[in-house]
Length: 381
Ligand SMILES: Nc1ncnc2c1ncn2[C@@H]1O[C@H](COP(=O)(O)OP(=O)(O)O)[C@@H](O)[C@H]1O
Ligand SMILES: [Mg+2]
Image (cartoon, rainbow, N blue to C red; front, top):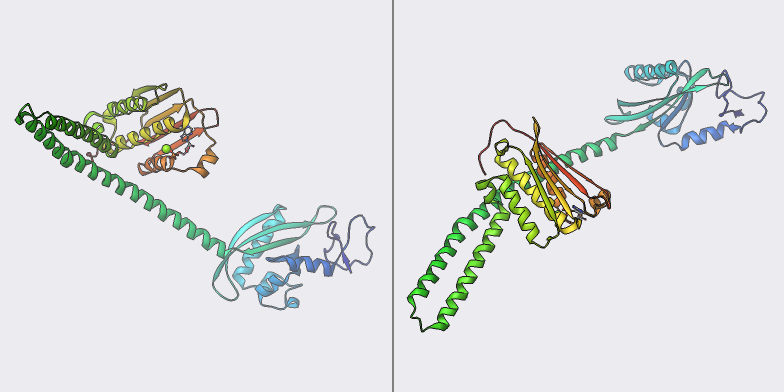
């Protein structure tokens, strides 16, 4: 008993082959064919053009809950509940009339158990003359994958929310510490300095050892005050709130050059009205700019940096472009040791904006932050 799989007989694909064709292609016995079919872990079948089953595999038989002889030679209407059968015949018809392969996702109740999702692929079967003589299909139960996919999406959504929350908690905490440093510590240090001044003037001039000591203490107090201001600025740049974005950015540019990037030429184009910024957008622009410039200083070995801040009708833009060594973005994403780039992305997302990084090894780095403008202005945090 043989059936030609590569060039099926005109009337039926699995008809007993009493007069086999010359062996232009290999013949597969029905047993071999059935073995192939049974080796497919999903439900697999072959039907003639009128929808009668010619062959099904074990998984299919198990899914129907009927013996094989109650399936072969019958149609879906004899095998499945009416609603499901109608659905199958509809899709069979679509394959037959279009003459092409179709991929469906179908919901149906399993024979035992609950609703399940199946991914089904159906294709037409043709004879020598390219006439469609039937259909074949494979149906995979993807319920578990679907559940995992849904769960993963939910988890991702939750962790995004958490990240956003963490970011604003961190910002609020930084503001608080910055204020405490600025208001309380700063006052105490000023009092200390005044006290030292008073001591100096109160001591007789022959107590030079003590006077020297006072001078040293005053220097320590001054440098502590400076350090404290720097930390407070990093935590929550008062300069940004008091003097605006342009001045704050210029301040960072100067500090960057002072911090040993002496050969670096930084240019700023600031074409935007400060009033276009809400306080929190200003803050994000400042932070992203600060991180971008720190990255240039630490990683880029660049000669020039161009910083552009501009607006369109709807959006505010920050572009930081360096001519340094650039990076392989895929590699940087995998090896990213810091949270710098992630933090910039996160801040942009928080404001409903977008962060974009373009870079290639040897070709510099181009960073764009776009944030939509807002109508009303929020007060300073
Ligand atoms: N302007 C740049 N030029 C070249 N490489 C950069 C630049 N900015 C970032 N990188 C690369 O991307 C990596 C990730 O940056 P980031 O997330 O800010 O973390 P970190 O600065 O702490 O390493 C850096 O370690 C560096 O390899
Ligand atoms: Mg960094």
